[in-house]
Amino acid sequence: MRFTTILNNLTRSIMEKYKNKKTGELYYRFESAINTTNDNDGQILILYVAVKDCGIPGSKKVFAREETEFFGKFVIQE
Image (cartoon, rainbow, N blue to C red):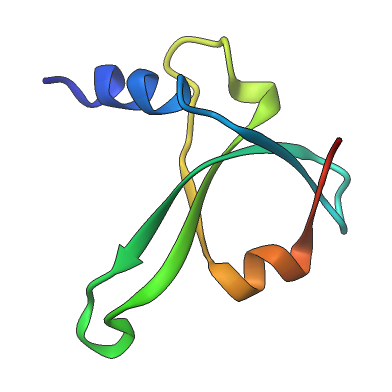
């Protein structure tokens, strides 16, 4: 399966929209992941994509941020 197909399937599960407190940019939080590298094994990561990139083929970049940092820098949009 191609990466773009996987990414498109992931973005279909988008559930919540968040705003970056510093920049005002909007993002969709769509999944959580577990970091399995030696130094950070078990760390929870939040995966998210920029709203402005959704709907533009080939432009979706997936970002990952540690859970505590994510919730400190983003606020949910109702």
